[in-house]
Length: 293
Ligand SMILES: Nc1ncnc2c1ncn2[C@@H]1O[C@H](COP(=O)(O)OP(=O)(O)OP(=O)(O)O)[C@@H](O)[C@H]1O
Image (cartoon, rainbow, N blue to C red; front, side):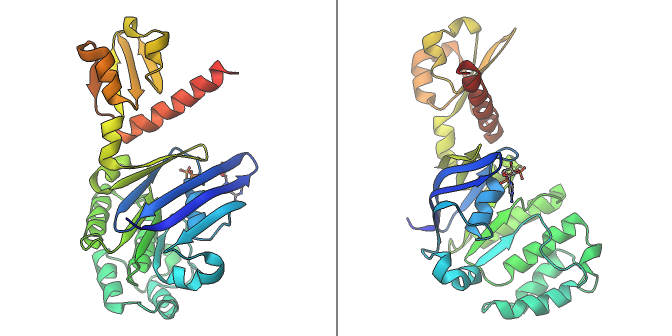
């Protein structure tokens, strides 16, 4: 299975933050969702993929090409959406169409018009008058109107109402019908990913925790609930983090089958959400840091 994006041992430092030796690949023909809490490095990864930031070390390739020699070719084939306004504010969408069209050899005016109508965007109003949701829709229109092979999106659903969010997921599903395209996008709305993502990439504190098939995550990870008397030095090792209360404990494991063998019917084993996985990973790391400080 070939990869469209490859990051190899990528590092990037800002004061107070470091992307640490990130290696990941994004599979061709699939939707990969990028998850992680606030400030963990998702946008930094996306900017590196888009060559808007350069890594301090490590390498990046997109479509098997590097940016040093093939920037134009790579950018031709990517549709990019981010939640910052990248356009001049004093122009209209019609002006933007005229400006952007010559930059893409596969620009499609018919497709552009279809998205403008579908998103109910005004062609003759200045972009500075657009609401956050309208800006996001304009950004999507531009990204989707040149038959890109790869769609990269940073928080595309931010600022969108739930109805349009659902419509966007439908559009993405339509794009994926022939498995020719690849989509990589970050989001905080993990339930959207349950509907559409084939793979999940999880970043935490500048580290790539995993990229796994969506269904594989739920074969490995489980939420386990039981009484606290079941927890001792040895059994605690089966969990990434544990939360205890007067009623008992709830914990996350990434060794679901093993936990089943150890505890049997003494515990409840439930399917976690992606949010549970993010929450307990952060909690586990904090506890580990406290234990060793
Ligand atoms: N250009 C920059 N200069 C200095 N620090 C930066 C720069 N860009 C990002 N950072 C810092 O790097 C860290 C990671 O930021 P990033 O935007 O990648 O996080 P994120 O996972 O996308 O967060 P969020 O979900 O909140 O948008 C943050 O601490 C941020 O302040």
